[in-house]
Amino acid sequence: MSTRLKGLPPPPPNTATATPQPPQPALDSPRKATLFSDPRFILKERVWGAGFNGPVDAAWVATFVAPLALDSKMSAVNLGASLGGVSRAMASATGAWVTGYESNPELAEAGMELSTITGLAKRAPIQAYDPAAPSLKRNSCNAIVSVDSLHTIPDKPAL
Image (cartoon, rainbow, N blue to C red; front, side, top):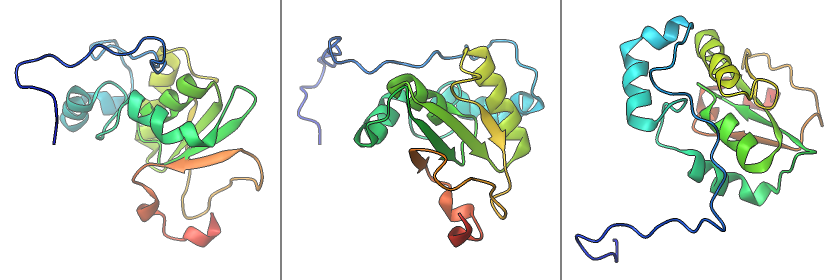
């Protein structure tokens, strides 16, 4: 329950500790991936924000990954990257190199396009992968995160 009085605007953000926001592609920016013509994804981006297709945003991601203490000399993996919003937000908030892996090749293609548009193609690439036969190398990254996608992986011990 909110303790804010009705009718008052929310307090301004504390700019001294504000979370760095990743560059966001404009919703109407020219995009080539066929997925961007799908009305379901058009609606999801309009509701959740460009590059996101679920109820998270860059500020939430920064809070979620803060305990990992990632920095620009570290790398991370995001399993189930979808459109890559979480991967790009992680890279922007921490400076880490974050590779997003997505099981749907169309989503991975669209996510990589958004990483390219936002200038994060190298720091936050999005790649397709097969969750039934993951090719992640042991000890190849400092952290692995997943937001609402591990339930779709058939052989979790193989990870």
